[in-house]
Image (cartoon, rainbow over all chains, first blue to last red; front, side, top):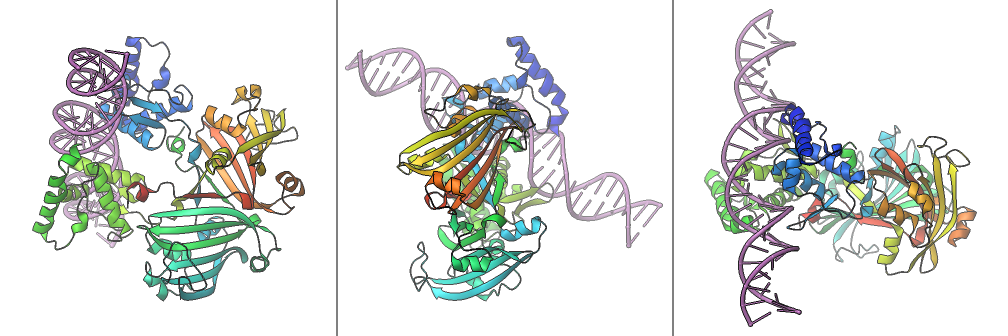
Length: 273
Length: 273
DNA sequence: TCCGCGATAATGTATGTACATAATCTTACG
DNA sequence: CGTAAGATTATGTACATACATTATCGCGGA
């Protein structure tokens, strides 16, 4: 890689150079580490300044030209690094005004939601599922899907998911047959509906709601727990090009299932800090 | 903007040109829409092809040079668009091999987790909190924080959060005093611990676990519900430069609190598709 | 047939240059 | 004194060029 080849040069010498000629006694934090592409090194260096608190929230950064001479790279390279950090939410940029450390990252915590089959398999258990009910109907006949016009043909599915034979999740799903007509032909005898859909149907957005509920007597019987047991309820509606594709409601036993993960846009991890 | 100025030229004429000379009867989907920067138009065009199913998962895309002449822009511009789509997870790129439509986006569903005070305020309710207990101790004395060495000084907090006077969340929190010594001086009489920390302490990663549990008698009394009521339990450990900063355990009443949100890296939204 | 090695094709990075865009600052005029 | 027009400054985009990196392909020899 080019960056590596010049590492000794740009990373150490040049940055050390300007810093010492200008004034600097001890700003060695601005040193690049020579690992990976130059723009990545700059990302790490800048993100490091922020995470270490040297550059506080709201504070203005040196402009691209200054950073460029500070690190001894071109403005374009600095621009790429800084623009990516801005895109990831670390920085806010305003033309003419400058670049500022972003305030308030609290909304960036996130939980990934995975397919139950994957989770069970990854934990080393045997995954199975059973379709309990399957019927075609039109929206509004007994079941109503709010975001879909009445009368739209729908496939309604109900199934149970097992880990090593123990029921862990109940799934009630509606599929828009206008959006996914092929699903009518699919028997789901080897692949679960969620997996089938995810592999086949592109989606452009999805919204979720996660709640805790007490199991009703019926659900408790299906899941093999006492009535009233705490369950995690996940409702997810998947859209494709602003059209609802599927609406699903999962119910999982509290002490057999949990959601977990680290923050998704975890640039720090990506940046090895 | 430069792109807008040349829109009529590149967006319509040039792309129309090569398509008709080569063979094409009806590939008008490759037309740019002239809105925004060129690389954004290309992102939209390519993402559109994928979301509309014209380019299926796993399929190989034309290479940068081909796309470049197809859209009548330089390779750098195509590169920027495609590289961003790859970074967002729509595409997978391999040198020499080419660019492919990503398979399996199922792991990209996500739930944002917000500060309870923000949620309550946004819903138009009055937010209050009360500190129930506060003590300093060393790790391992009665309480143990697994990821922290024994003997590390810790601040332990317990508090309740209210919406319009109704308790909605119980919080039990440990703060690493080695990492955040200032917290020892903070009385928390106007600002809640979570907010105080989030405003003051930078963090580089956080991991979460969300579960459903039945309220114990003690918790039920604090939260004003019947014993056994389903509650959402969120455990979050926040790290800063690989050092644990705070470990917090939230317990929220199931029918007064839920997590919801759309997929975070929702490029389709961002792309207006 | 198999293995290795060089040619090749694709993406990745860095820099230069030029101009666009949008705030902010300055200045001059009413 | 206020305001509007113009200068300035910082970021944003686009293109050209050059070279690095890395799979893959294909050919030749053991």
